[in-house]
Length: 358
View 1 (tube, rainbow, N blue to C red):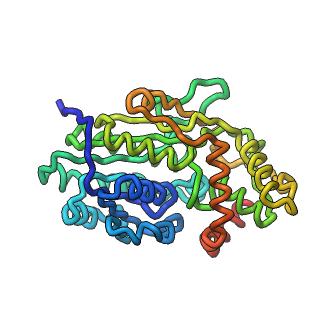
View 2: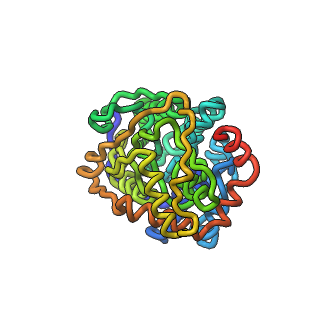
View 3: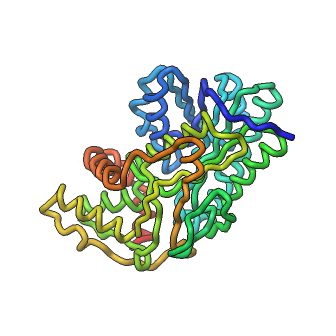
């Protein structure tokens, strides 16, 4: 029987997708908290990856950036071996549901084949090479569980997988592949399924940054259907604190849900942002006049909610940000970093947005 490990002490971490939203926030979090640990980012710099997210990290001698694809197992293997990496934190993924509806192929390739490529390289270098202390942490989503009725209990780690979009199905598949590499080969793996993240550096196709940016520009705020879809919202660095606890203290072959215990309907989120933007820009008030209801997207899940009691009881996790403190910090970041999001929204993304929302 394959044994289980509990404690892990990272020395050098490979962060896949580290130029993306959550990945870049994780890099900044890690370098600040663990200044003596090396961190290497592997990112293909597709539309959602932005090296400018790592400008501060680039100045740190403990940081290294590699422009490459997780589908390149040989490259990953050389990195694991040459850089003496003992920990992989796997963020890299195609993650926008709308894009998965219009073009699912890229999601299956990156999220399923890409994850398998990493696992193959990890097995070769760590297991076949005799590395005892290692950890492969896979970052997943609550969307693998499907949708909840309004009064249903929140998702636990025992909830049956019922993905409803190509994106969610691709993440569910990758979760199963990660688990199989523990049970078949003995790779030390952990998985986290998180609720909706928000915070700095989030690509402006997602609800919160899109609403903030459009409020600033006086553009319509597109709301799917009736806007009553419910999500649990998690500030990005609270997510990173949870991952940190799992990497160091989580039990191998375990899944941990990370949530903010913070359910909001989409329309209530939008109205709150409008009210806060009214304070920042009284001349543009009321910003809620910009709300525009659009046709609901295909297969739109009605409610997600995370039960994070396992990670709280076993690893001592607790979100530090309330939604009020987190959303205020987020709005201020987008106000202070207008140059960043305007540059991100140029070109092909703006064309895609106009095509799908207008």
